[in-house]
Every structure is written in structure tokens, then in C-alpha cells.
Image (cartoon, rainbow, N blue to C red):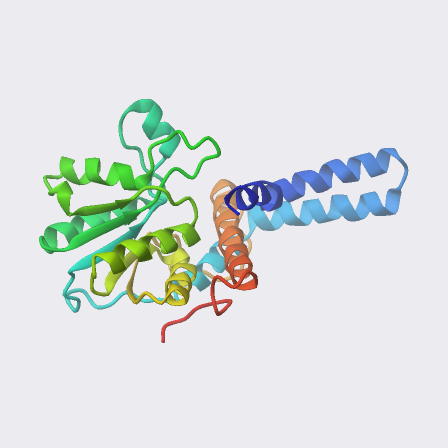
Length: 264
């Protein structure tokens, strides 16, 4: 499942699809199948234009980010938190011998803030090395180093180091949480990732309190043209497509009960 998801995403992300259509269209044009070539080339241009020069990606992410609001600050008595991996640049961190973070660094920053505010809270960090090689330091392994550097007792951390996908995060974390008889935990992950994560925890029968972080949009995005930041637009579109496809795949496979999980 892990290898299939990784390979599939390499093939179906927007820029890969656009490149494939450009290549096929060029070959078809050379073979004089002009109508088929025109369809492929036109489709590639449309995908590239939408990906680079519209707010479609941000709009798609915004729809996911707004589903699970965070509880009011101070309303939770935090005794346990689950932090999902994805905050670490695993290859760079391993090669450099120091922690380097992705855009999802807010997951670790919020973990540290809550760990300081609630000194008795247990911290479950789930995330191994999600690369093909499996030779890099994962988020769970790095979390103890990160917290120790901030003066937080790393013995509070329960590390789940083998998961490579969100589904594995949940399956492996459930075993740990139930074995330790921990109360309902805060679930810390990116806001756009929260619907899929909550859906998986619900399916697994484990109660969590959503605590979204790492917002990528302002919450006020409308669909429009945007020629100012094509690189950022491409990244947002790629992230949005991946998350929506992840929801669809998990629903079809029965890992979640709803295409778009929502608050109860």
C-alpha cells in the first residue's frame, strides 16, 4: 500500500500529468494523429494554466482547512496529545545532522508550546521514515531531540517510529494509546490534513480532539486568476490535489466512513 501510494502520486500529480500529456501529444503530432495530439496538448496547457496561474489550489485547501475549527484556547485540560509526522525534512536532517523542517513545522512548534503549558501531558509522536529507502530519521525519532533542546523532558514522549502513511499513523498510534489507557488526546496535524486524520481515528474507534495547525490559506480565498506567484500556486495545487485524492482513496478502500469527515 505504501509503495503503491508513493508511485501513484509520482504519476498523477498535476505537473506530472501535464508533462505526460505534452509528451504524448508531441508523439501523436509527429505520427500525424493531429486531432488526438491537439486534445492532449490542449489538456496539458489547461492543467498548467490552472496549476500555475489561478487560486484553485488555495481554494481547494481552504475548503479542507475550514472543516475542523480549533477549540477555544484554554478550554482544554491537556493530558495527552498526538502529533502526526510530516514536519521534518528527513533526508536533509539526516545528511546534515541537524533538524530541518518542512512547511508543517507548526506541528512541532505547537507540540512544544503545549508541552510547556501542560507539563504533565504525555506526547505521542507518530511518524517514521516515509522515503523509498527507509534510511532517514523520522519525525518520532527527531521529536525527542527537538524537545530536549528546548529543556522539555523527553521521557514524556511516546515515539511511534514505523508508520509511513496516515493510515499507519493511526493504526500504530491506536495500539499505544489503548495500551497506556490514555484519555482522549489532542490531535495535532495540519488543518488541511485534519479531515482525513479524524476520519481514520473514528474508523479505528479512537476518540481525539482536533487541534489543527499549519494553515496554508487565509480563509478568504476566492477562485480567480493569480499571475503573481506561480511557484506557490503550483505547490498549493499539488498539496490540495494530493489531499483530496487521499480522501477519495481512503473512502474507496474503506479506511474512512465518509468522503469528507466533519465534526460530530
